[in-house]
Image 1 (spheres, rainbow, N blue to C red):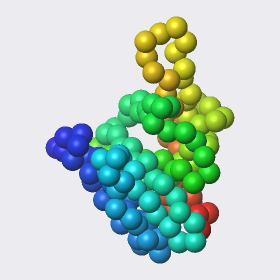
Image 2: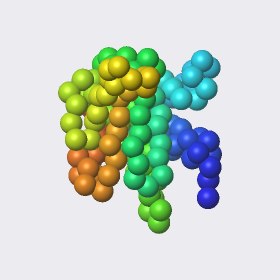
Image 3: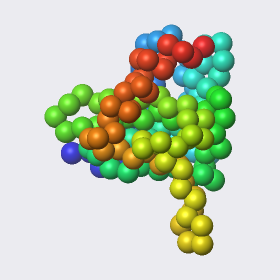
Image 4: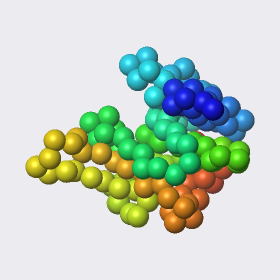
Length: 141
C-alpha cells in the first residue's frame, strides 16, 4: 500500500498524463509548491493544485494557500480500494459558493486556520461527479 507521499506523487502523474492525453502541454511542478501545483495550457494557462485521498475522508486546503480565481483548478484524485483512481477537476471559484460537498470554514475565535474543504463521503459522491475530469477538461482551452 502506498504511503501519503507516494499516493500524492501518483495523483500528480495521473493528472499530468490525462492532460497530455487531452492535448494540453504540462509544465513541471512549480518549485515553491513542491509538486503541489503544476501548469497546463492549450490557449490559456491554468494552474492545477493537486489533492488526493484514499477512500472517504475530509480533505482541505488552507485559504492562505489557495486564493480562488478563474485559472486555478484543484485536480483531485480519489483512490478507492479495489477501483481504478477517479479523477476530478474543480475550479477554485466553486468554493466561493459552499455546498454539502465543497466547504468554506473560517473558525472564528479558534486557533485553526481558515480552509476550503472537500467533504468526501459516500453520500456526496454523486455531487462530485459533476467535476469528473472528462467533463471539465472539455471546457478548458
